[in-house]
Length: 477
Image 1 (cartoon, rainbow, N blue to C red):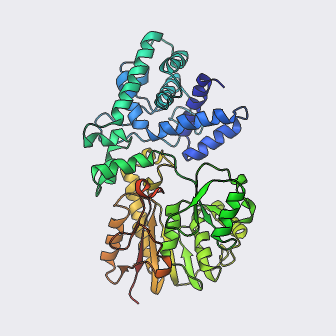
Image 2: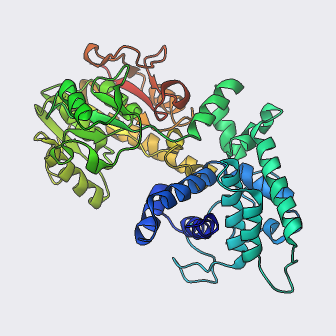
């Protein structure tokens, strides 16, 4: 398809995503799957402009607001969600989960202004990636420009100049002249950037935020219940899939490109699991061993649960809790494929105490913004405080179910001290008999990023994986 037609599809995709409740990757997959006419190159183009827009939304929106001042593109309306930040910078505009009140739920009406705004957003990103020229975006904007007495018409030459100006401003915003402009340069809400930057130098914050605006690497975990790391690498070499072993995680393999699940050797035999290196590091830190009684209290889809089973070598008892019945069913199907036999049935009664409880709590997800760049705009200060209360409640609840000498592993996929060190410090202050325990010898992988206190902290800029935090908490023996 030609690039103008793809911009039209991209604007429709972005609008549908903004008014839905799916994660960005799921919304994209659903959209392109329904459109069988899209070729591989078309999908790559759409993915490039879609994810670039989500990663750089604030910077692009403010550039458009400046360059198109006085036109329909700079009008603030609930459907267009523009600009993304409030004029006084006191907070951020929250993308709604549904449409405005005057349209049917789950089927918001796309006004002409919406089409123009989303086309401009995607188009500026496409210009930044050198995928289109300013005149191509101007022509597409001219085609979808709203008509009517309330809208000021524009001429093509004027529109081209505004597009060029928007691209120049967006590029200038990318390079902040002062540290206080870093939140805009990296397209973060001002309030969230302030929390993220706490405890980091400006240079460290810039490097981490820049890494979060890139594509996440594809990392596999070798399922040691089925295959050895050496056999796994030989299978990947045989399938001509370029990869390298992770420098400090046993069994982790980093792919050099994107590979579909169907092309992995022994894909249906449970040899591999897709799992970020930071997530794998949490499993290694846990110190799970054969014969233990272990609980994954926030199992999700079960990536860490399966890792724990492999570390236990199927010896002992493993329990998983997940309120979403669909995800729990998926976990048990994955466990069967992976050869896990120590995982108890979903309705099995829980023991009163556990040797190890892994508590990968609900959190802001700021450590995984490469995968879910929209998260920073769907998060609010109020929502973050609710998450913090949930985290405290989970710590208090499950701390009482750890056997003497056992471990409560607290973990997040967050880069915020408020969800990490501060939560652990508050728990230790409220429970003086507890302490942060160092990793057990079997879990120590050379180079694992540990703080002086023994906490795990991974950083996308320094370690190439998502940003995770974990602390092994141990009560009195």
